[in-house]
Length: 220
Image (tube, helix red, strand yellow):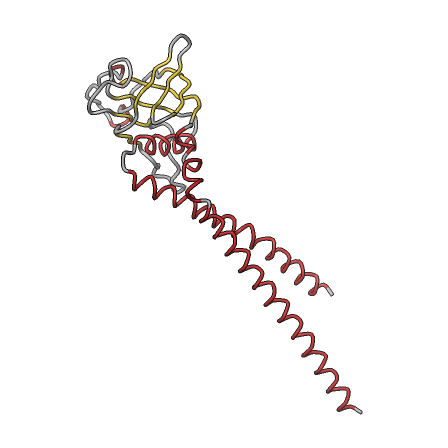
């Protein structure tokens, strides 16, 4: 009698384990199919999505502070290291990047600056552990051939936040880039990143469901 009970108990345990293994394999199979479908869809849409993916650089707009290089006061020889700071007064202007040009809109006029071939430089990070972009340092836009703004070949752009500075710097560099291979590489990188985010969105709900099931089993 005892042996029959033990045998039945073992059969029940094996049956439960078999069902759980089958369920896990089924979920993994469905997940792999979903990820492959998302990746194939993203790859199929790559030629059509190349331009929209770079729209953030072609249509970037917002408020910036513009400083012409000629308006920077001459730096005198500092007596101490703490006196290295210069006081400047940049002008608050609405700016927009469109068709590889920077459009500066004033109250009574509009200036269009061609960005193609311009040099874009910026101090990206501070010496803090967070390595965030330092907003107090401007973005430098320089043309080697023709004046950009009010006769100046160099202008400096200040932004309100470090995040805006980083975003504008990336947009300006893409708009000024003349290398088609680099632009295609950036576009492909954006496609891959979007496919990666889509796969994460597909994986996370399954993981949350498994965690909820395991917590329910532990409570039982």
